Structure formats: structure tokens, C-alpha cells
Image (cartoon, rainbow, N blue to C red; front, side, top):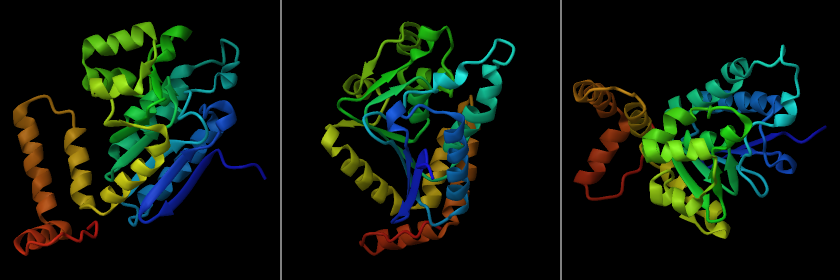
Length: 260
């Protein structure tokens, strides 16, 4: 029996998802997408999961689409259909999941692999990591949410530079530009990401999910965002975690959140 292309385990309320094609620098193929769908099905249904860690096996995070799969005739080749079937649902699920998703980028994150990382909520990268919008080298446009995410993270000028030139961006520069949360030494990446996931998993899960929903809403006016904040704060205020947080504050003790 062949080894899974996506490794999955739950430890201390953290779902650990590892892209596992190190011999192909974790390039995404159809089998991998199928396994990722099954993994996120389990995560969405398991309310004991209170944070998610996404990373890659071996020397890279993800090199994007496995181009060996794309050796098709012109009549058979429909990249839009491939996006609609695999990449778009994956990005939507990560953004909509009302639990924090941490990405630990251990090496190159290229093409759709870079944008998969950027779809996560908190991105850490090892110092040797890099981010490459390699699409223009193939005569394609950035997908997997890249044209939406990049301008909002680094601004139009830098986003267009990255997308039109296809040059690698170092982890250090990515952190300086605000593309990612933090760059750490390579040998400290796994430990730092794990500690962060444990911190998030011990937090007020319901409120963290509502924060994600508010930030990802994409409302266009202040009035709309204020109305959304009103509705989500009403929901958060009815949670058990808020009652515990308030009691802990008044009692001058650390809160013990249960994720409800």
C-alpha cells in the first residue's frame, strides 16, 4: 500500500496536515486534492479540533501544480475546470473554516503552493523559504486566490511586481512586506509553529472563528462592516468562552477556554 500523499493527525486539539510528496517537492496532483478534501471533511466535522497546522514534508512546502499531470491535448486541457474542481473549493474551505489555520512554510512555496499558504490565517516561514508567483513563466495568471490575496497583503505595486516578473521573494522580505506573520530560523520553524497552534487551540475558538469571518467578509463600506461587527459580536457575547473570559478577568485569573 502506497504512503498517503497527505498526512493527517490530531494532537492536543490541533489538526496537523502535511503535504507528503517530498520527491516532487509536494507538487499538487489530483490524488492529493482528493486526500485534502477528505482531511478537511474530517476537520470540519470534528469540533474537538480547535486549530489547524498546514506544512510540507521534506525540503519544500509546495511547488504548486504538478505539471506532469498537465500533459494533455489542447482539446482536453481546461485549466478553469481544474480550478473549479480542486483549487477553488480548497481555498474557500480554508478561509471559511471558523478555526485558525497556521501555515509553516518550510522551503519554497511556488505558484498555487504560495497562494495556498497565503490563504491561511497565520503564516510562518523558515529563513530559507521563498515565495514565487511563477505563473507568468508558463504564460498563465496567478490562481488559487493569488490575484485577490496578494494586493490586499502587500499592495498593488508589489503584488503586480511579484506576479508580472515571477521573481522569488525571500522569507525575510515577505515578513518585512507584511506578506507573512513571522520568519524564524529553519531549525526553529516546527517548534515555533507548534507552540503557536497550541496557544490558538487553547483560545476562545468561537470568537477566533468570528474574527476570521469578519476579516474575510469583504464588505466595501464602513457602515456594512460596523453592521457585521455588531452581528458577530452579539454571537460572540452569547458564547461560553465569553462568560469564562469575563469571569476570569473579574477574578484576576487566567481564562480556561473550552472552545464553545
